[in-house]
Length: 347
Image (cartoon, rainbow, N blue to C red; front, side, top):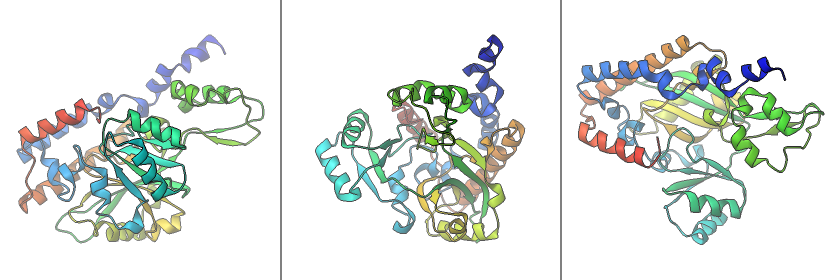
C-alpha cells in the first residue's frame, strides 16, 4: 500500500470524510442550541419528559427497558428475563436454562444507551464472564433469527387518533464477503467500516485471522445492530405507506402514554412488517433518533433537517401533554437523574 493510501485510509480520515463517524457532540451542538430555545419556550429544560407519560422521564433519561417491554403484548416481544446486579451465576444460569433452553442469547443493561454493554452470549462461560463484569441490573432476551432488523420511528399528537411513521432504517450487520484469496484479517483491514472496529475484532477473532474465506462466502462479524459496532444503517423510508402507518398505529395505541419514539424490531419479511407481525427488541422514547439519517453518503444538512423536525415534534407533543396535566421533570430531579446515569457510564 502506498503512503498516500495509508494516509487516505487512516482511521482519522475515514471518520473525517464521513460525518456518520463523527463524535456525538461534533454533530449535535446545533441541536443543543435548538433544545435551549425550545426549553425557553416551554419554561423547562426537561420539557421532553412529558412526551411519553407511560415511560419513565419520557424515555430520555434512565428509563428501564424491562418496564417498557412489560407494557407490550407478549406476542410482539422476544422472551425476556430480568437479572439483578450481583445475582449469583448459578441462579442466572438456572433461569437461562429454564427460559431459553439453548444459546445464543442477548444480554443488555436494563438502563443504557447506544449499545452500551449489549452482547451476544454463546455459552455458559461467556454468561459467567458477562455476569461478573456487569455492575448494573440487566436483561436477557432470546436471540431472534428473523432476517430483517429495522428501526421504525413513530409519533402521534395527543389530540389526534392517527400517527405518522417518519423514519425507517434497515440495519445491515458488519459482514465480510470472501474472495478465495484474502485472509479474514486482510478483508477486515480492506473494509473501512470493519477497519474502524479492528481493535475489538482482532481480539474476538484472534484464532481465525489467517483463515481464508471462499469466493462469496459471508462471515458476520458483529451480531449487534448498533451503529457504534459497525452496523450499516440504510434508509428504508421508501417502505413508508398507509399500511405501515396503520400497523404501527394499532401497536402504539396498545401502549398507554406512548406518543413519540423508535421501535427497534426484527421481522421475517416486508409483508410481515406491513401486517404488524414483528418482534420488538426495544422501544426507545424521547431520546430516539430517526436513524435513517446515517445512510452512507447522506448529507449532514439532510440529517439536521430530520433531527430538527423531530425535536420540534417532540416539543409540540410534550407541551400538549403538559397542558393535559402531565408534569415536566423539575430541574433538581432532572439534574440528579443525569448525574446518576452519567456516573454509571450509561450515557
